[in-house]
Image (cartoon, rainbow, N blue to C red; front, side, top):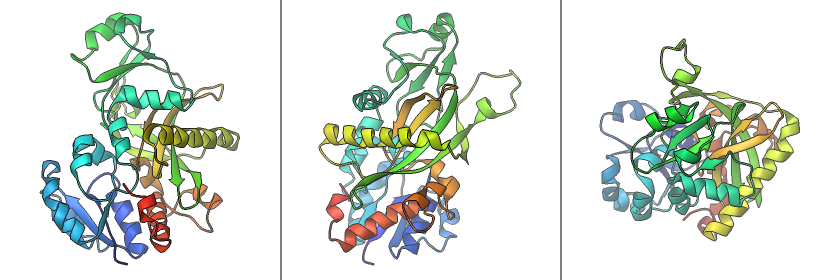
Length: 323
């Protein structure tokens, strides 16, 4: 198949490239210096490019000669960001413009609110905050740098200098990271799985010896109560509609609504990721149980991306799934 699926060698690269190779695509990994040995040990990666995030532009011509489609993920959002997304002149699977929205916390929350999705309260200043609150930094940092404050005095003491964060109500409940896939080829939004993040000092055995830390070290699979599913698919559809209104194009591919579910089964979405999330790795090679609702078999998210690309190619509609 005369198309190369390329991505940064990080985050969900193994899942993406393994699935692409199984679907018949050529594959390419862009790795930072020092990681080549690990990624070159996998036979489903056809080509390896070595470059730091600030050197990606030098790969444009080689990738274009390979007829490459680039799959963005969280590492690209964090280490390359919207400026490099705009200048990296390779077709992106999905909406590269959404990376600019995802990079700014206030814009993320505004998009969720425009979708009519319940969210925690956001406070503009520490003086108006109603603790307990969580302070979150811009970008896809995997929880690094987030902090909790149980009272206003602690908030004022801990607050980082300058802009680049939001203060949000800390909702009591359990976290659920809900995976979706927006498909122009099948004209629907699919509920595609869920996970729980395993976060260092929040889930680790710190015995009160350290401040909570939300750095993600891994993910665990989650199967939700079936009674929640109609509400969750509606939220996914609302999100896709809000993206269409905001960016003027249909939502394409994976996204994640990051939520807290209270003991009253109220779902509050505190953030979104507009691309594949690392929590989908829990289903790599075996598939999400939710994928069986749509397909005759189990698919992981990498396989779902490749299926959408293959279908678009067969219908001569690649422009409908890339930007």
